[in-house]
Image 1 (cartoon, rainbow, N blue to C red):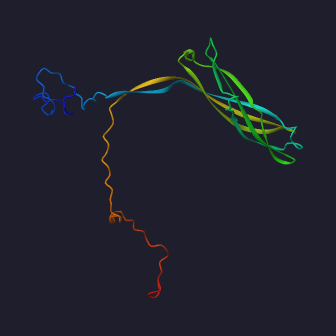
Image 2: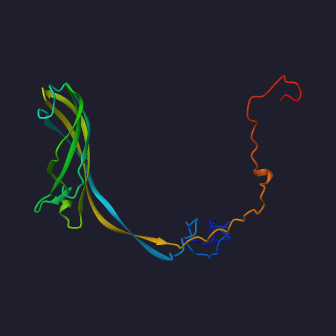
Length: 232
C-alpha cells in the first residue's frame, strides 16, 4: 500500500524512520509502495488502429523478352534498364482476393518497364505495354478468419537488361511482395486531462535591444598596417 511517503508508515519499532501515516501493532505493512498511485482517469479515449498479426516478404525474379525488330535500325549493340513501375490506374487495379475453402490468396497487378537500347541511329527508348502478373500464395490458417484482412505492398525493380539477339533484348525484373494479415482494433487509453496553459510571455516594448542581447561582430576586411595616420 501507499502510506503517504516513500519512507513508509511510521511505526515506533518496525519502521521508526517512516514519515507516512502511523500504523498500530499487528499491521502487515511490508513491503510498501515507494510512489503514490495514479489518480483515476478523467476519461477514456478510443483510438482505432490496424494490428499486424502476420507478415511475409516474397521475392520473384522473371525475364521479359523484348522484340525490337519493328523499330530498331540495324542491330542492337547495347541496352540499359531504365525503370519499372506499378500501374495504379483504375482500369489496372491491384487485387487481393481470398480463395474460399483454403488458406490461399490471389494477388494480381499490372506493370510496365522502360528500357534504353543503342542501334545504328544511337540511343533510343522503348516502353513495354502493360504486363499482367498474378500468383496464388499460401498463408497461415488465420487468413480464414472473417475479421482478418490481407494487404500487399508491391515493389518492382529492374535488375538487368542484356542483348539476347540481333534485334532482341531480355530484361530481368524483380518483384518484391510484402503480404500482411491485419485487422482493425480499438485501443482504450485512459486520459488525465490537459496541463494548465503556461503564462503569456512579457513583450519588451523597448525599441533598442538590451546589451545582453546585442551581437558583437568583428570588423570586416583585412587589417591595415603601417599606414600613416588618417590613411586608414
